[in-house]
Image (cartoon, rainbow, N blue to C red; front, side, top):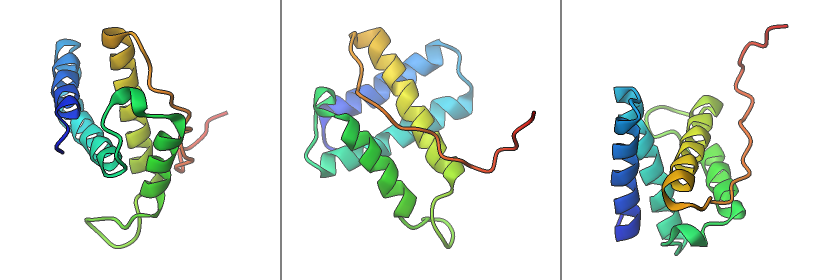
Length: 118
């Protein structure tokens, strides 16, 4: 990732998660997933948070629905895609609290074979 602003936000987001007492795995993996999102945005020419629109976040999720899995055969699981959604939403919460604005996001969790209890 080459955008200084994005690098700053990944680092700052990591520190925010630590200060709030999130688990070690959350502090490790949330910024990694955010980094992937930012790298994808850079490839589209989007280098500032305020440039991100609702369509961009939806396109990123759709991109991950069809991209091949890097570790095994097949595609990315719905569970993994839902993690991207959760991390982007958590980052949006961070931005709202620290910067006073929100990234327009309208992405819905995918059905991921979660048992539904009645």
